[in-house]
Image 1 (cartoon, rainbow, N blue to C red):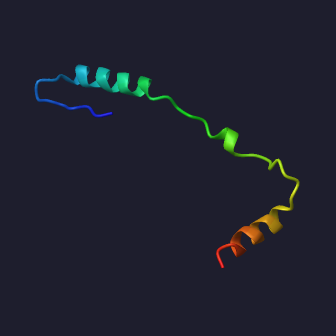
Image 2: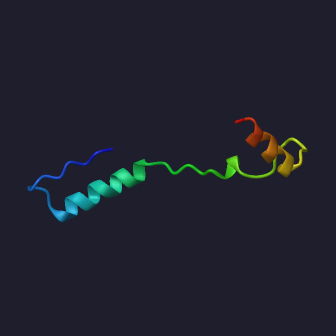
Length: 55
């Protein structure tokens, strides 16, 4: 979102416009992407396997 600030705008108008923009932005949580793996696999083995795929 872009806010164009003209010389005619007052500080109060700018602050209110910024608050509207902030309220529109929905914060998304990343908690669902972290945690235990559904597969029962050793983490160190998985890491070694993932790194060996590059070679």
